[in-house]
Image (spheres, rainbow, N blue to C red):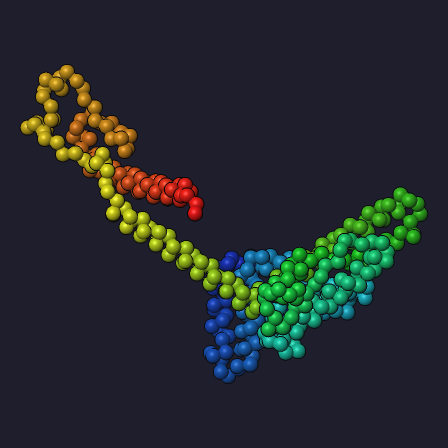
Length: 360
């Protein structure tokens, strides 16, 4: 009988993520081998259990699965003799693999990570092939049989041109759908039905039990594949490689944008400012109006900024606007846009001139 993850960390089943993290740190410090020189072997084993418990309970998806299958997982090793032969590997038997205690070290040894799970998934694949053959004989085929690549070893590439890389392995098992009939889950023998009405009721109940068992088995196998992938060093290395590639691509894109901005700024500095964009400094009268008082009485002059599409009632308000940051920014944007249009026009003109050149 295994020890519950919650008991190992010393927390309640409804403990929060924060509580679990604090409990893990406390237990890890208490049982770290470097702090237990008088019991190194015992501390090493207990420290591994603490790390395994935290790894499961700190992941919301794995914790939910553990909570819903806790009893079956805890009795894992005690159920091997309870399964019927026709059932093959059962969900209860798979529960014992949801722990780092199922293997000894992440290596290619006989009891190591790669050998243990390679043998397990090869056994499951063989059972699926036999179930598919049985369905074909009984004319109960559920569709094309899925190809299941080998789990491989520590040197198997995660992604390659072959049909047996690690990526294809997980692609097949994460979408697992069994070919087994689960007829051993039937509660009633149809031959004992006294009439067709009772027979139909029996068939309905048996189908319900089969479907439930099939769903449970599919979810258990797929979840086990996800559990293994999360601890697979080949997948972890692939994730790190993809992360580095993404960061490099982002850095390259950022450098490209900065270079384009620098080129645009350089062109903008060489661009000849159009006369109409400049603020004209006129000669003003002493009152700063630039007009005779008699003319102001006859006309109500309106000042307008065509860049910002705004009008002003006084010249002073207009001149203040001309010096504002918003206006200057708008002028700069117009300048850049005109430069872009000019470059586009020059490019089209050059292409047009080349198209009308006489041929030799």
